[in-house]
Image 1 (tube, rainbow, N blue to C red):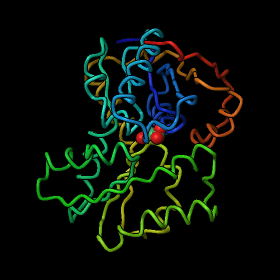
Image 2 (tube, rainbow, N blue to C red):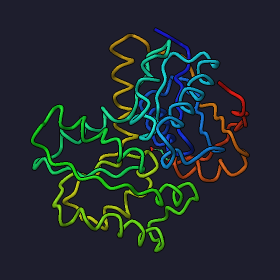
Image 3 (cartoon, rainbow, N blue to C red):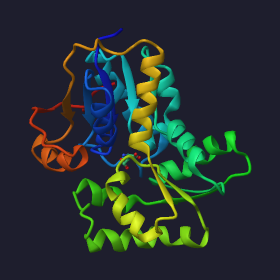
Image 4 (cartoon, protein in one colour):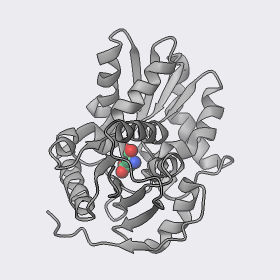
Length: 271
Ligand code: DGL
């Protein structure tokens, strides 16, 4: 048993898709969330900068005495696995659990991936899929503008601007006849309705936030690292830019109001 909190981080709000699921699956766990809102997006930066930011983000979470770290960010998970492996506590990213979930549902092995430019250039999901199923056909598309739209809260099902952008990115997948689409950026589950409407019901969407939370739950259970069942769980939120915008958009990710204090921390000069 381990009553210390679980640390979760992302470049911004996308990682809250993991928090939402963790709160549902592990109500006794205390969570610490850090969203690097002052430096979002990570997905169009160089892998070296993403690694440096990831190391700093983990450094902040370690100061909060976390027992486990989740890089709830497709971009960090794709290029900074070595940073996660070198930490003094166990850590995981979103690539492996999400690839595993896609392989479990895909019948044809024709799998699409959407993510940031860094994620797609790294071929991380494709490599993870092919390790298990070498004959799979993986088609990837970077969708950087969707990250900005989600961070701005443009996620309503009937948002025509977001739908038009998504359609442009997703159209090639129709000809490629995929049966499964990995939402390889943790921001994208908020666009599931729009994406499903474009691709049709025959394409199964894999939510990287939900699959990662499920994997974390089973790993902590196996390793006997869960908090005691009489503990009260909850989440503390930290951001690196003004907190006042956070609560409104965070509510859409979490499916509930953020009543907790959101604290701003200064990442300048860290690491
Ligand atoms: N949520 C992040 C991801 O999963 C990235 C968005 C960004 O910072 O570009 O890739």
